[in-house]
Image 1 (cartoon, one colour):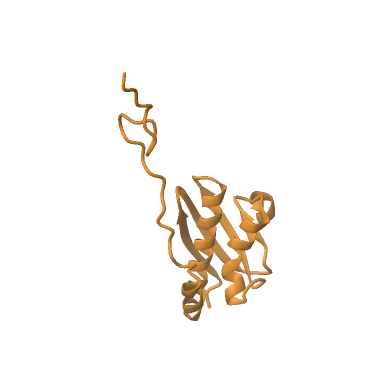
Image 2 (cartoon, helix red, strand yellow):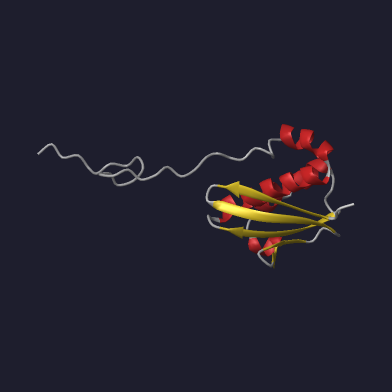
Length: 129
């Protein structure tokens, strides 16, 4: 039986390559402990939600490398990567993860800046005279 499962998660501009390895529940992101890398407890809870739903918390070690975007986008990317890897571990996890919305890639992206404008929506100040 295979003990190493890997997948890719994306959110906003962030891309996370996640490896699940049979272990004791150690989690590292870019070589640092998850609690060191992500500053907020709510982010960590959000990232570990796939393990909560599938009750596999201390069965796998997570080794993630994340590039691009900000901290929130990176957290979302890692969460999606973990969920996808868990489905590779056991196909029966797909249904509960799907119902919790953890297998859906968040499509929201930053809107591009338009020409002749200050930003995506913001305009330069209008002057009648």
